[in-house]
Length: 138
Image 1 (cartoon, helix red, strand yellow):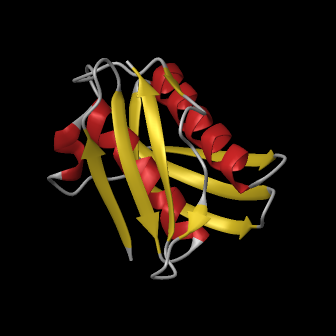
Image 2: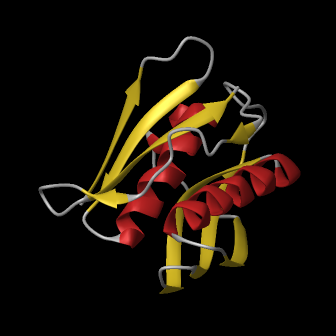
């Protein structure tokens, strides 16, 4: 189970993401970015046209998540696509091997410049869910 909630922020987009596992947390982040870029992609079934392999190693889970989301954002800009699904082959505390699935769009609803480290800290809450705040620079 994952959840995504957009929180108030003066100039950027701030979102709280949660997941019952690290995989679900990454899925929530992927969806959060995708909904900002082009919300209607998530409202109707899409056929994945763009499939990108991502393999990252980082210093910890928080950095891994931020770097992963920045990779998704980079490929969104390069391919002019919104990624809406994720297949994880391996995820550890410091590494991920995955494929992201998406479809091309004519234009984005909103542009995201970067996923920031500001406020990001992956932790387990009292309910046992992984959670963090992600701030998107728009």
